[in-house]
Length: 123
Image (cartoon, rainbow, N blue to C red; front, top):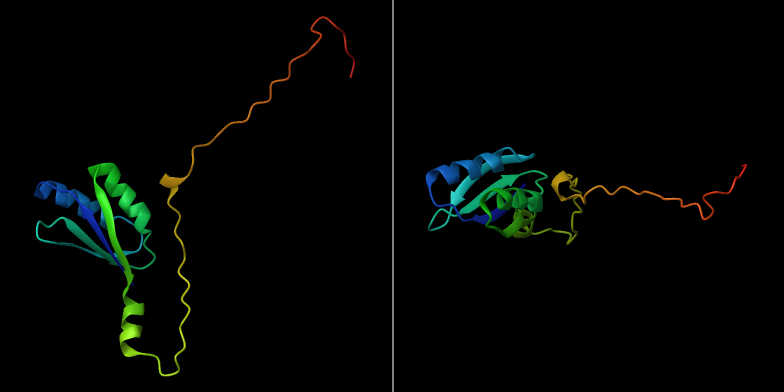
């Protein structure tokens, strides 16, 4: 489980509701909560969440979103328990694709100019 904290500038409850809907609609999200003194920090927990893509979605809507932290709760619990053998467990997380970050499509055109426009050529 990942825990992601994103600071978003939200003025009213309507903005908070929209931000929570955007976060909840993302793939792999289990829970969304608001924290902080001004309720301007979103805490998103879940599996295989693309934190950069989520931050970009919020930034597109609210013009001001900052990724504060990304932590893996399972790794934090393992460190607290301590490994008896001193071995580290390698975890492989799938990387979801965020299609909004892809570069725009480019088209390649090849223009062939004839150096002798009045000449007859047989190919």
